[in-house]
Image 1 (cartoon, helix red, strand yellow):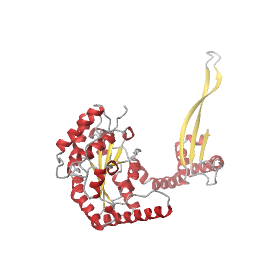
Image 2: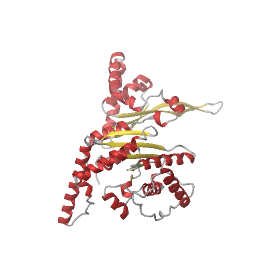
Image 3: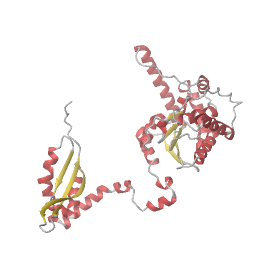
Image 4: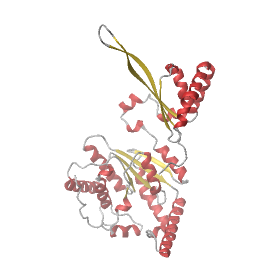
Length: 390
């Protein structure tokens, strides 16, 4: 379905005349959307509603959050949607654009197919009215049937002093960049935000966030998955906090019945956590309890495996087919994998059974086959750093 261009909308009403009731705003916006696009509109399956104080690092960390959740679509940045002259004037005055205009522009944008699998929305909701509209949007999606949408609230939090310092730093960097562009005549000038140049306006923006957006987002804690991310530290620390907050939480994402069915199975992160210690323990056990087999496995690796590995050093990928009888012993096979793993190789082994014709039964003329075991060993390792040809 080809999406028509959004219908022109009237300028936001003056703040003192604007409707502040989500029960009036959202149904009107929703009905208008369905009237123009039809009832079968498609929205993303996962939403991350990202909020934070000015200078919290939303723009810096959004790509990192997207990778953490396997979201490939670009983020929807509310400030970028609000580019009308009326909206720019309101923002420059340190005020918020009308809720109806924000909600209408956002829902229109979310219909684009690129967001179908998941989307990060940067800067919504910011007001209590927008929070209520978000709840109504969620229930509107539920009413359509099908799998429930995944709503996550992510809040990057910084203290007031950090926020002000980062805003002013951003302002200085923009001024310097534009000065260099004017002097050299090369490059494009960046927007010089009035609010990034005045400490008083910086503090006003932060207080506006604390008094309006912070409290509004906090009210969603009991409804949706909520991620409170400390963002005062450096980039590495903040991204470590993000990883911790967005770790896989199956108990939240699955129904209770499904979760109870699979919760006894270990998480991949739990297996990897002590993998090195377990590997060392097994190698010591092999040497202690099965020294003869252990020596034979090491000898076979030296004689048969390493020459092939060396031959493929440029690619870092070797494939070996072996009928070695020693590997019929499951313990020896595990020893081979563990020894190579300890030396930094990534090893996988598949067992294939191949029927080889041996003779023909003279009475039935049936072909009698011998089944051979072929171990297909795949070994990956860092390739050579020598530059390859063009």
